[in-house]
Each structure stands twice: as C-alpha cells, then as structure tokens.
Length: 205
Length: 207
Image (tube, rainbow over all chains, first blue to last red; front, side, top):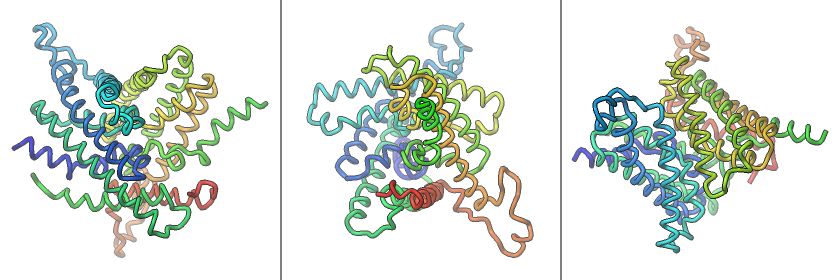
C-alpha cells in the first residue's frame, strides 16, 4: 500500500516536469508530435524503472557511510558518498548503451522508432534526478525505489504526450505573435500546465 | 588575424546571438529551479562557467584519443569528476547555498549545455578556442539565470540579494509581493518573455 501511494505521488504530486522541471531539454526538443513523444516517454520510463533500483542497491550496499559493513567490521566506517555522482552517472550511461544494444538485437522495429532518442536519455536530467532524489529521501526498500521510478517515468510520459498534443493543435489553429512562435509559446504553456499541476500539491496520500 | 576573429566570436556569440538558453534551448532545467533568489542563481552560474570551461579543455585535449563508440561515457565521466570537485568546494565554503541548490549541483552533469558544447565544439577544436567557447557559453547561461532571478526575487519577495528594495511605505499602502513569482512555473513564463523580447530584436531567429 505504501509503495502504491509513492507510485501515485510520483506521478502527480512530484511530477518530474511540472513540479521539478527535470528533463526539460528533451521535453522541449522532442514534443513536436505525439508519436515520437510517446516513444521517448516510454524509453525514459523504462530507464527510470531499471536504473533507480540498481542505484538504490549501489547506494545502500556500497556508497553510503557504513554501507560496506557486510564486507567485515573493519569497513564499517568507510564513507564513499562523495563518489555517488560519478557512480550514478556511470550506471546510467552504461545502462543506456546496454539497452541500446539489446533493443537493436532483439527488436529492430522498436530500435528504428526509438533510435535517435536512446543515446539522448543518458543526459536526460530526469533520470539522474530520480537517483539523486532517491538518495535524498532514504527510501525504505528496493521496491519503493522501483515504484517511485515507475511513477516518475509515467508522470514524465503523461507530461510530454500532453504538451505534444497541444503543440500539434497550436500549429494548425492559432495565431501567435511571430517572436513567440515555437519555443516561446511552449514555455508559456508548460508554465500554465505547471500551475495547474500545483493543485495536486494539497493532496496527502 | 583570422584565428583571432574566430576566437573572439567563440567568446562573444553565445552572449546573445547564439545564447545557450534562449536560442539553443539547452540547460533549461537548472535555469528554472535555482532562480527564485539571486544568490543561488549567481553561484550556479559561476559553477557552470567553471565546469564548462575546464571540461571543454579536457575533452578537447583528449579528442583524438577517445573512441567514438564510448565518447558519451568518457565525456560524462570527465564532467562528473569536475562537478564532484565543485560540489565538495561549495559544501566546504558556501554550505548554505549548497543546501539551497540541493540536487541541482549534481544535475550540472546532465545539463545539456555541457554535452551540447562538448559534442558540438570541443570534439572538433583546439584547447584554447574550446576554453573560450566554454567561458562564453557559461557566461551566456549565467546572464539569463541572473536576469530571471532578478525579476523573480524583486517581484516575488521585494528583495535583491536578500536586501529589501521595495520601501516599507509601499507595503503600508497596500502593495503586496506576488507570491506566484516564487513558484517554479513563473520561471518558465519569465524565460518566455525574455525569448519574446530577444526575438523581436533578432528577426532571423523567428519561426
């Protein structure tokens, strides 16, 4: 139940885009149409679900102060937490490369539709941000980390699909002042959607 | 002379015409999150300038030896190493600011400005121009950060750098701070206004 609450919280209350503004660059660059937005959203969700538990285990059994106790009592006061940034990004970058190779081998169709986005994911701040928030919040178990990852990923997916749908309509039906076209208006829409998503802030679950 | 001009434009262009935030649309995330107050925005700007300049130089020195297949990992490791240094320095000398910036110092690693400049410039240029390019883009980023933070702090809390600038008598006559400016969504709208004004004067950027 606890885990389910965290899952729902991560989708709406702690939404990566509208509450923390993470993963904004690819969010703005790849939201021109719904289909590619859906592909990138799926890839990000997938990476968050895999990388968060791995980084959780790494954090709790290798990096944090006293985490190396299982090696023997003489390691009990080793603190490697200053290495966490490098370890997390290395895990994410190598996972990205690995996932890219696996997808290419087993599902060429998916690979050609995701192709260009997969390498982009390594530098998507939402993924590293997820791991850093996980570190900050001290999740109780690896399942919690998994659920939070799934929630953040889905929240990101919802956000990018929504904005892509709005942008598709905007191109056809609206008359925007010239200097504001393209990026400018997308920023404003994202801001307004962020204000709308703030209404979830009051919900306690 | 020609090389001098090229170096100069590597330094000057990112300030306005080729600004990383409002033209190349890179590094938006941190730009929105740390700009509620001027001081963290300033520290963030300095950190990014330092990391960007040095990672550009290092990657530029290594550019002939990095195999293309694993270049993303190499770039990320170089950047991560530099960010860890900055993070530890801030914790040691500017502890309060580093608490306010929380995860966003760590997120410099995935700041797209870094990857973008490393890929687009440092991989194909000599160390000195790369250094200038890093400084230029870092300053371009910091300028936007400071403009956004200035307006948000002025309108949102009535202060600049923590000092009150809106006179007390205004509050007594019914002036109120705009609480919305503190919240992150308004950062997006402020950036959109900057883009709007910038594109009015730079017609070739309009879509």
